[in-house]
Image (cartoon, rainbow over all chains, first blue to last red; front, side):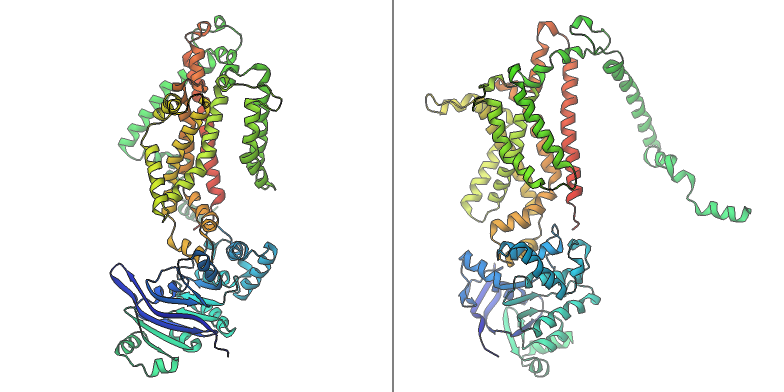
Length: 245
Length: 364
């Protein structure tokens, strides 16, 4: 496997008011690497991945995505966002557009793909997440699991080089979690570079190359799944694991 | 049928008193003593107004004839309206040029019906024709040029003038209002401050003051010899006035948008303008359709204020016609007619807004 560096975060700090949400975060992600981030709520894990496509601005340190440093330059931000797909906890599909229009929107308007070609590609991805039969429905007519799979297809249709998942299964009913996780496992097997914020430890064990445990804005532990579950070093990790396993 | 079964069937039906007409009456009109009294009072009031109005407006009214002598004393004299119809609809616009207005009405009507008919193709093209070419064509047709005789705007009047002012106000104020709303929410302090100041100044001033300023004060600030048409000044006043109101309506819609919609649009690399045009505005405008149409209806009715700067709109010309010595004493008919026409337009807009809401509903 090549070790092309995709994301580099060096001494990143961020505050919300007085709250130090990211405290000296260092992270390197190689191509095709799958990283799972976990930790108690409020530990800064969502903020961390939202900094990677600049939905949040970091205030100190540097973040380099595919060789481009994230600054205020809106052009480079938009370019990076085109390369980085994101899936949200609340799906965030556009309710006024059909599933197909949701998926083709960015390819047509950001990538300037001809419409017919964008539709072909969209159907291909919708098929891959097994909701091609729902293409002409509106998001409100779909179940949560279907909506989240549509959201994944929407992100994939931009053919991103990196995928960010921000608690993709937390808002789903238990019986729908698996269908979304299956899609994500398939994606991981296809060699996608992925950063996943999740509490699904089964998924982490199966897929992750590295599990990161965060607490109070810091990366407390970053290890392979085996090491993480069997030999956690810090007390905080041990407590966390005992609570969720 | 055996009685036992019949009893069973009876039992499975809801009690008579809770369904059908009787049920509806009981539930809505006679649910308590106080409601019963209110219902009876309401019926009495309607009874004492409606029959006498109907006999005044229709049964005893005079429709045939051409002078006021032919009118009956008891009923309405619709001859008054009939004889002055040209003035009421077109003002002093020259009779031989009326075809210009009528043909534009015709084009508008055809396009309007086309757009309102479901399942037709090329609606987008017809719509853009109405929004872009039609106004340009109207300016030429109404005021003259390109071989057409010039008709000064002081001759414009009646329902025609009302529709021009309301049409321009409605069509131009929405985009300006949207821009102002976006401006007020902008992260750039200068843009946001200027938009806020603009909105608050225009909202803080009564329309009648705006019109006075436009007609009397504005020329004082202009260099010698520069003179804007009075109608154009009034149009600009009405447009900015309603734009300021619409801006706040639209801003309400923008504020109601969940943050996730912005984030999802940004995360896929859409630029600010694309995000607004494709994701945020279609949803937030949809949410505030009732309030937007409410503003449009208000503009339509507020056009009657242009009378104060000497423009004779629909209502103004009806009042004016009533002062004609040949037709003294028929202002009731005039006002009833004006009310009826205003109601038709406003009700039409209101119905259209409800249809639009239903059509655009994709659930949330």
